[in-house]
Image 1 (cartoon, helix red, strand yellow):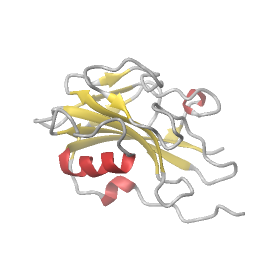
Image 2: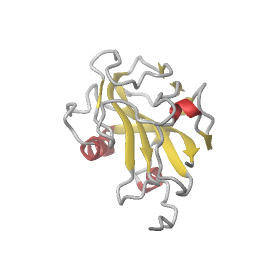
Image 3: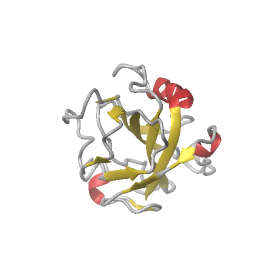
Length: 175
């Protein structure tokens, strides 16, 4: 079976425009291949992230990692960290480990691989280059209003109405 298909658009270009701010990483260079430890078979380790310049009125953050290039109609959610307090502006390498201690009332949703934490890149062998969008969403409320049983689709729906800004850094990977 061939997995040849067109490259999907940047999913964040399809959403209503919001303010942008800055996200950087000691472990990830925007537009460059992921490090081995950010790949499922070699480490499953979430990258370090730091952000600044969020819009006024930011009351919490949601941090996500999404692969729009998965061979499915809805892409693949690798990580969703919800209700991160507004005074948190960085995450250490590995902060997305399943069972990790999180600040305040923050929690992680199930990723599309079925675990509650960061799942590294795992595209099919010989598939096209996949893009991994690490996004820090500046949220206008203290809590997104969901619990840890929510799907990533429900999280995204709530973010559509409660996001003041987004900071995006992308990695790539091909198996």
